[in-house]
Length: 542
Image (cartoon, rainbow, N blue to C red):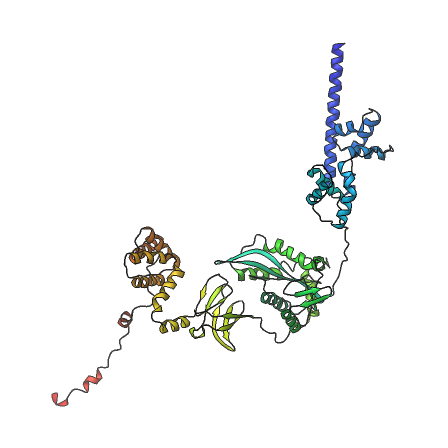
């Protein structure tokens, strides 16, 4: 009997193992079915394979297993077993909820959350603790998450716009932009037509009003027309003040809108869905254009953006008309746009600047030279993306290239030479300032040379000549080497420059301007006509 019992128990164990293994396999299949279902909510939760339902019903009715045993052995949730049995006609077992410490404080919690829906659980926990609650904060936070009122889901209308009727405008931030020593924000101006979804994209190193308006003008020129209405966010470049329905627009934007004859229309506060087309366009620019893109400078990036807007971006399907592309819909919409103005005003930055005791004005992190006769004056800077003009009333005093670097000195040689001629003693200081900007290590070399009683004027002149023959980076490295060797002499700098040149296989440096006596030596000599000597001969000498 013992052997028979042992054999029987072994057989039952094997059968149970096979049954449990089969149940686990079926449960895994159920998990795959549930996770692979794309539906959400109660529909996905109520999907149970038929074999699992059959096993639940058999174990409950035939084997008399409890619901907890069925859930543990089949590795399903208790609610799944309860739901299958309820669908089979068995009544649901309703258990009385256990009393909790927070039950006495639920009316106070509900009333407080109705008044302050965003009140944090930690602050609410402190309030109920002052009223006698003794529970743990982590459990209280879990309870508050269940009782906090949920915002009601909002339904939106799908709006359609007529061709040429509306465009939407916004800025997009695309990280920092390194220009020399300056770190500027890379801002993307995006305008999209609401009907055809044609995108215009232009990058700027700032989000100023002038860049904002330049983006408008460039978009209108690229499209060959102007939409009738432009939707904006509540930017400071658009809305200065808003109280209810009363809006005070920026006067510069109103002047620009009057020139191009369109209506500026800001959306409601905190209602980004009203300009969802440009929001999606910015996201499309991030994923479809800017991601993993390389560029040399801002002009190169804008050239790539322009090619993308008229290329792959225009070849995508139009969301409003899936059977056609954006290019095809925009070709029809172009004729519905307003005509461009005949003579639009130039978009220049007007900034009043003060000239100090040095003949420079500070504009956009850089210094620009002016004639020395205009120190201690207030002048006007007129700037576009490529040029900076400095004017005194209607007279333009200086014109410089625009720099987006930081701390750079942009000079007109005529301004500096005029001041140097007037102040002869400033010549040496002028050369020292030039060396300090090109090779900062020269100041350390001059200081050590002064300690040894060397002629600083001769050293400065020699270093300036070396700066003209070599570049600033090579001179800086050579001066650092001379300082490290504690030889503050220009010959050590010259030796280091020559050694670096020979190591890199470079050509010998040649002075750009030869001395006057060398230039005279190479001047072509015109031979004198020998016939004039015949006139000196006397005929009687024959």
